[in-house]
Image 1 (cartoon, rainbow, N blue to C red):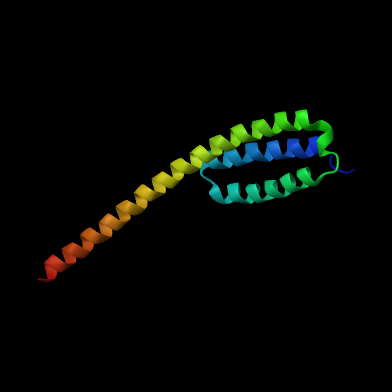
Image 2: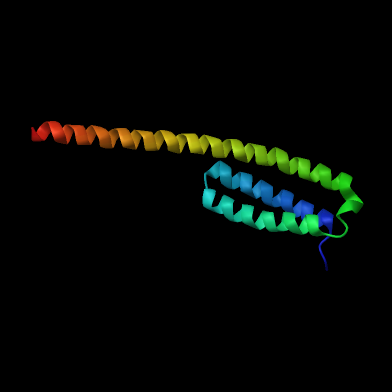
Length: 106
């Protein structure tokens, strides 16, 4: 049985929820895998010949996807900032160790 625009939209919504769950757990590898899967379904949705038949329902579902995506993006930004702080701390530690070595050798 061929997928309908509604079934594709619901699948996109389901995967979006899964992506958010992965983001909350910090499983960014799995998040990316799901994002790739979702991208293909989104392409299939907009290539579907019957997409214009149910635009109101599709818009309602896709608005939900956007809300979930915004939450995932916020979690991604938090992780990005955390990693940036961690990298900065590691660089500072390395610089301090190098300075100590220079002082110890003199």
